[in-house]
Length: 219
Image (cartoon, rainbow, N blue to C red):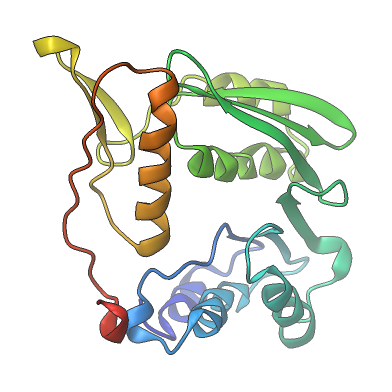
């Protein structure tokens, strides 16, 4: 949540694959604007072993900024810059994300000219969108994408990361999304709750807690 922290970690790792899944307003209290947050996140391109490869979210607002930093500052070759998103020019194109009756997400996407479907054990579409990074990584490493998708279908969200808790009392269901809060993630959590009205009968109640590290933008 401060400039220089990610670069310090890259000195330890000396990695050859870096991923920035999203740039949002989390930790904005320590930065001037979202452009500064993107610059700080781009520190993950530091100290990479060659050939350095990176993955970016083409649908994120800071995609063009990150693309320029990666190419000009860090000299990462165009053929080693991969991106996912909703455009047919993306290395992985997301075609559709829908919530199923069992509150799981079904994701369809195209990767290396082949269509795939992935089913995930949570109902947040934005989180499901980020999970497509995994089959993209698997493909970059020349591993078995279909096998990876089978494992992903068994993955259960960690506590506080959108896991579903079912209570016997009056058939209550709790979506535990308490790990962290930021303006964008909280907005998406409320959208997810609203979308569940198509699948879950009865009232929907949102319990909101503090949102920290927003600085002058806290109000």
